[in-house]
Length: 491
Ligand code: HEC
Ligand code: HEC
Ligand code: HEC
Ligand code: HEC
Ligand code: HEC
Ligand code: HEC
Image (cartoon, rainbow, N blue to C red; front, side, top):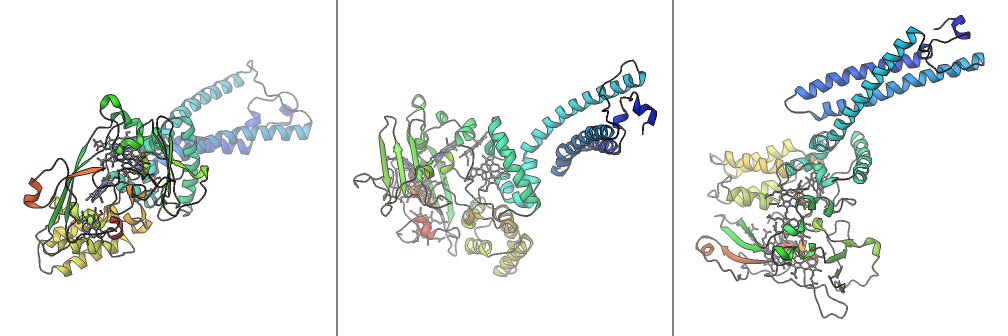
């Protein structure tokens, strides 16, 4: 504390900072600065960066550093006010360069200030990168984001960062995402998030500004060949294959014919729709505006409601590709794939139906599930040495597609591409959406409009390729009705 004498005449410039608030601030600032450096070194030297170290280094330590500095000045301000109250004179806030002690103090402050500015520049750059990283988005709150992270890591976008699809470029969305992100950090910390995380995301950035940074519509190309390998659930696991050309089409007349499936994304067309449920699985109303500005409206039979323009959504990539990064395979698809790759031995009798069954039992947590799968499969094939590898494959399928802690699995996340397990394209292309005069339905609703089946069946059948396409021969009996009425994931 300054002496009585010095208080009445001239104040040493630093005396204002000699109070307990400023001292506390100084200690906090110095401590966090030290921790920042220590953590920085730890983060740089670790082989795999750890999201928690990241949070401490780039968010917690800087926050403490800043509050320390703030406290340091608040203390001085408080002290000045106190002196003013006691003496009626406010000590001047000036630096007297003729006093050597002040000169020294000024130099120390200046160097400290510059160092602080430099650090905060480096710090905020790192903080920015860190909060955009897959580490932060996917791993920091590991149970919450585990389903999204695991499915993402096994998807086609495993090296595209979360932020490239969920935030994209530009300051506006950056700020928006940090605001909602702050709420998410809070929700995670206080265990207030829904399980499973709901979909669709209401305020997802328009796909033009994210997906199209990498997949621009002019680039889309004609037909894509797809081969689907299935195994039936009979005793011999009869293979059944469909090989087809998907008429994906393009969006640029100088690169090929415009049309096909990506017709919806042709920049000149505008397709809008109204969904009557949160999950966007029921679409009773569609409006098309063609390049000439001609508007056509289609309605499904019983839909007579007034359309509220605020609820109308313009179709973009996400209305078909809603699972580009987080795809939950159904038990049926996952087992078909593992069998076609030879990871599950298709010579084991009824292995298809048994493996699928083991995956459809409800388990409360992962440990129980892995145990349950092993028990069920061992009982189904006692004393068969081949079952060991089957068990571990079925367990792997479980770990990649089922997340009981978050209640997340295929049936919680509709997949809008195709029409097997979810209505998908048939939400609009069901042949029932008509114009008001009833004369026109949405085109493309027969089995050859979106794809042509080149070959199907098994063995010899697959050698007969028919470029003009063949009618689909459903395995077993002829069937009637929407595919997703029967194919719900276990079939
Ligand atoms: C290729 C783009 C892409 C990448 C990369 C990506 N996502 Fe997604 N994500 C999406 C799309 C598209 C949706 C579904 C949006 C919809 O239907 O509204 C989605 C949905 C989500 C959801 C909501 C729940 C759900 O599954 O629908 C969460 C949470 C999520 N993503 C987190 C992440 C995290 C964490 C990462 C990084 C580990 C990530 N995403 C990477 C595109 C992506
Ligand atoms: C940062 C670049 C980038 C962004 C952003 C991006 N993708 Fe991709 N996408 C890729 C790459 C790379 C591939 C893999 C290409 C390949 O396999 O030839 C890919 C593959 C795909 C495929 C083919 C998947 C398959 O199964 O083979 C689809 C469909 C796709 N992306 C859709 C989307 C959608 C929808 C979005 C927006 C939500 C999106 N992408 C955002 C880079 C990106
Ligand atoms: C009407 C539904 C629909 C819309 C809208 C749509 N796509 Fe597709 N897209 C498809 C289908 C169907 C395929 C065929 C591949 C398949 O079956 O997985 C495909 C294929 C692709 C592929 C993969 C090509 C390859 O070589 O594997 C990419 C990439 C892609 N789309 C990106 C996009 C992007 C980006 C947008 C938005 C600008 C978009 N799509 C809009 C339905 C759609
Ligand atoms: C929101 C409703 C909606 C959904 C969902 C939708 N479409 Fe369409 N689609 C349309 C409309 C509207 C047209 C324009 C046809 C017309 O006016 O008759 C169209 C046109 C098409 C065409 C014809 C393009 C041409 O060259 O004329 C194809 C092929 C097509 N869609 C495939 C698909 C596929 C595949 C999917 C699913 C992955 C799909 N659509 C999902 C509404 C939809
Ligand atoms: C509006 C366009 C459209 C129409 C109409 C259509 N399909 Fe498809 N179909 C698709 C798309 C898109 C996929 C690819 C889904 C994917 O990428 O996995 C597909 C996939 C399939 C598959 C592979 C199933 C799978 O997902 O494992 C079969 C089989 C099939 N279609 C049969 C048919 C039959 C039979 C009809 C007539 C009743 C039909 N399709 C009508 C768009 C269409
Ligand atoms: C009335 C119910 C029903 C309807 C509707 C139906 N299926 Fe099937 N589907 C079955 C049954 C039952 C099997 C035999 C399953 C087995 O033995 O594994 C089957 C098998 C299949 C398989 C091969 C097996 C597999 O692993 O998936 C394909 C592909 C298939 N259906 C496609 C379709 C398509 C595409 C549609 C719509 C055009 C459709 N199904 C409509 C009941 C149906």
